[in-house]
Image (tube, rainbow, N blue to C red):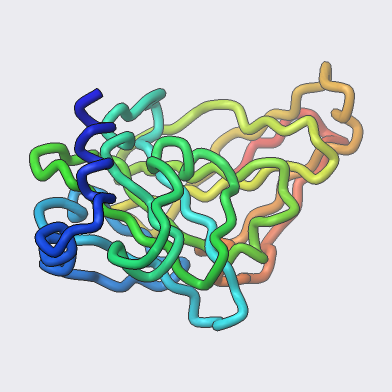
Length: 218
């Protein structure tokens, strides 16, 4: 209830409210650039903009591998536009960033009105054209010396897309990749790898198909 009242207070049109919003400092990030949400606090907000004026943006959060929930994501508000003064607030990051939500223009903005709440997750914006068409898009964060394991699942014919962010290293090693032979689409399953983010449109480096159910990658 407190969050709802506070948000409504910001939406009330008054000279004092407008002056308060204009006091926030803006930081610009390009699509394809990730950043820690801990920086979005105090009197600052972050705007993610595509270099392509005809593009739209898909904003995603990245929780650390092994973390199932980040409740602090609910304190970050997402605006459909390049500022918090005129753009429309479209939801909280915990809902907007967990699915493929396409902006109406080339920018989205994140703000945290609760200065004392800092999420340990990261944020990443992508050009919408590079992630649209997939069943789902998930971004995961890891760090040097961390071992990650889990399931990457999509039963849809258009498949799923995953981005792994290592905040302090530049190399990943995949030691084991298994295909589930019990799924209805197991005979058509495959995994491809490419560097950077979808926005960078890097060449796909390799493709593993489910002809062999056990791959050991070195």
